[in-house]
Length: 126
Image (cartoon, rainbow, N blue to C red; front, side, top):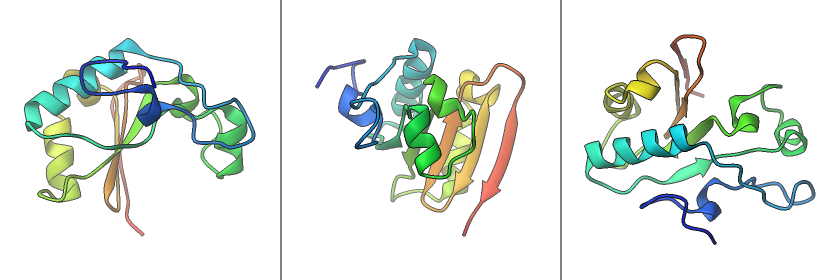
């Protein structure tokens, strides 16, 4: 395990695939710093569910081809139990990288990305 920033490590952000890239974890410092700012703003631990995904793993789980996860520009973070998904989104939007990037609301977690082609918002609750 490699400590990538004060509160996040390689185990949390590595590819979760079993037979692909060997659990690689390319690091995007803009994403890490935005995650640190979000954690500081919330004053509570955050729990990443999915960080980097190699293309093989991304395809195997049926995720969007070309997902920003494959570029180490996205993370899915569990919604803290004290908040609703929408409350969590409202806080995430106060971080400029996420405000200008993508925020997707899913059941129990947010997708956060640092896209550079303008803000995007979506809701997918199953």
